[in-house]
Length: 134
View 1 (cartoon, rainbow, N blue to C red):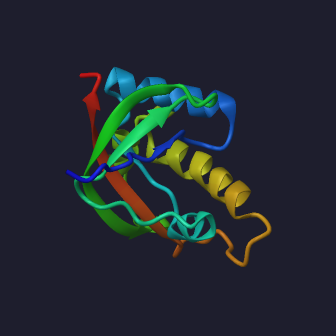
View 2: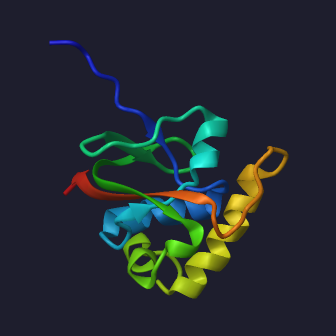
View 3: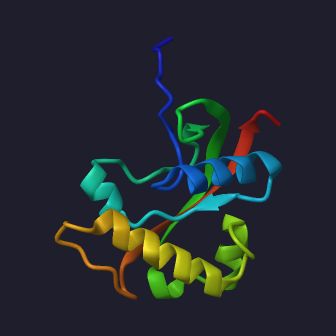
């Protein structure tokens, strides 16, 4: 059997949010994530596929759990709904919170690139399941 490396990473671009999101996954509240396709291009990361496994870490790189991708949809920023926001489980779970927090995040991670945040920006909406620990 061929050995398969499982990618490991943390959510977000800062310690507080990364650690909070890892805990939200462990608690079962966070069941999705939504990077922009442009961020993945900049970081040379493949678009997730159904069945993918990933090790989620805290900011310091300590493994917190393993998630498995259940579905992937490419949506425009302005197509994200309150349903999607609730699945992400961040803040108060509202669409308003999601839009404000994510617009700010996308502006930070795309800064200095040839991409600008806009309503038509493609978002990779990935639903996942915590498979370890469970």
